[in-house]
Amino acid sequence: MGRRLYSTTLYALMPLIWQRVWRESLPERSRRERLGHIPDYREERVLWVHAASVGEVTTARSLIRSLIDDYPEHRVVVTTMTATGARQLVTLFADLVTHHFLPLDFPGAAHRFIERLQPELGLIVDTELWPNLIHAASDAGTPLAVVNGRITPKAFRRYRRFDALMRESLSRLVWVGAKSGEDAKRFRTLGVEARNLTVTGALKFDLDIDETRLGAGEALRASWGDRPVWIAASTHDGEEQAILEAHRQVLSQLPDALLILVPRHPQRFDTVYETCLAEAMTTVRRSRQEGVRPETQVYLGDTMGELMLLYACADMAFVGGSWLEDVGGHNLLEPAALGVPVLSGPCLESLREVADALVVEEARREVADGHALGRVLLELFDNPAERERLGTVARSLVDAHRGALALTRRHVARLIEARRLAYLMEEEGVEPPS
Image 1 (cartoon, helix red, strand yellow):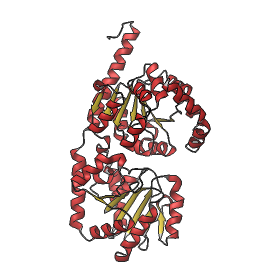
Image 2 (cartoon, helix red, strand yellow; image 1 turned 30 degrees about the horizontal axis):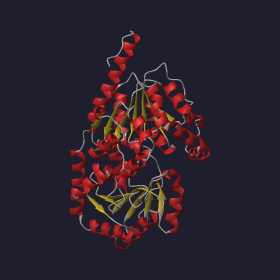
Image 3 (cartoon, helix red, strand yellow; image 1 turned 30 degrees about the vertical axis):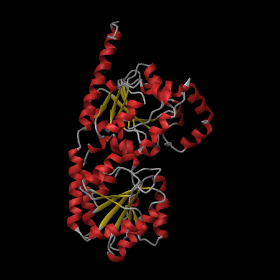
């Protein structure tokens, strides 16, 4: 009954939903994928990963790479909800994986998608819990698991309002690898059986550091000469003005300072560039291969897939989305893994455990607004020893928490082997044990 009401509501909202996803497309991809119209993969062995957007694709990077390496006889299909996630996937893996957009969670679309894909295993990264998709996979005998599972307090309260629907759906998952003990408790409360639940830790700690990219970043930084450099990354509308205010504060005392500004969403690149010019900041764009000159004040990182390279250029990093409650912050571990001191705002609900761990280890500085950011930047530019301490402690924290990938890989191997044995028993007409 609950799922029927849920589906009826989706159908009623279809015009609004379709309008929302219409812009999330790629020129070479049919929008009919949103209704489950993908090629037929039934003659192939498929492993399916769903990573909703850029953040989830980045989180899943090491896991996707391990699937490619561990199961060369399989096709790895990755779905996203957003076009930016699709572009990030192509940047990271090119043609090593196949991409499709996830269908909208209408019963027919979900059934059609699963029927044509027929994966041996489906892995949902973080938490995108679509009831009709989960049911379609379960009804087709496709094992579905959640990796790097997290449920924020806000999302938990929302799911509890639909307790019966979520409980019936989540009971169909074959395994959940939760980021933390608190996440595991929330999954358990929502209906995941204890025997199907493991605390793995966060996949984000198992960052795949590309030494070639780091070398390119160091070379790029060296080409700019000996000047103070900081980065503001994954920024949103409403944050850039405060960041430019902080940079103006830094320039008042360090006139040769350079800000690397990397907006979160590519559709905002042009707007942010115009904002920089309106603030009378001498700005060049990486996408245009414009070189940084002595008079350059802002280097706009308006490309995809190069964030780690740009982090490697910086003395300090402010991670965006952290001044906006409805965003809740972005990946603090990427600069930390490179030993770059981490600064952020206070709105970090979507990664609270990581944020708190960095504070406990005194490896993150929190700033309330642009003025506070400028003051802390000047303080740290004037104190190289404290910068080095912050970076060293942050990198040590990341190294100490690695291990989620290895544990997740072991469970993935177990699930794939169980699926293979079930298939063989089915072929021989043997009833599986109860």
